[in-house]
Length: 32
Image (tube, rainbow, N blue to C red):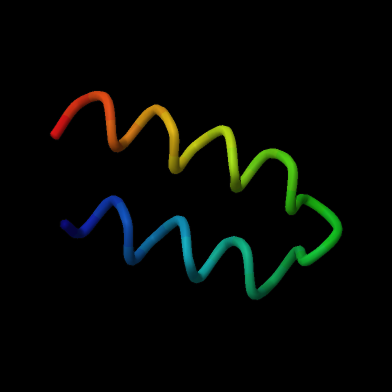
């Protein structure tokens, strides 16, 4: 789950990339 943690950190640094974050979460859920 380190990937999720990294995504969260990136999201906190760049809140404007919320759409990218949502896409990333969808991709992560598919991989689980």
